[in-house]
Length: 96
Image 1 (cartoon, helix red, strand yellow):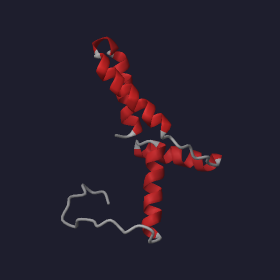
Image 2: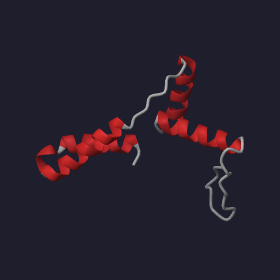
Image 3: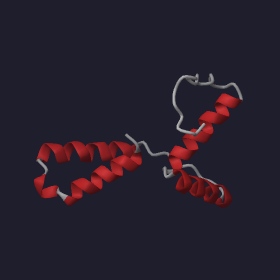
C-alpha cells in the first residue's frame, strides 16, 4: 500500500469514525504509527525538489514514487540491478 493510498484510507476512516469498530481503529492507527516510524526523509536541493514535484504532478503520483522510479531505472541502467524483462506480447495502449 502506498503512502498516498494509506493517507486516503485514514481520511476516509476519519469521515466515518462513528461507524468504525474499536479493533478496526486500533489496526489503522497502528499501521499509521508504523508508517510514520519508517519514514526516512531525504534532503534535496530546491531545484531538484521542484523538478521532482513537477514530474510527480505530471505523472499523478507522489514524490516518493518518482524517486523510486528514477532510482530503480538508474540502478538498472548502470548494471547495479538486472533489467526487468518486458513482455513483447503485452498491450501497451500506445505507451512505452
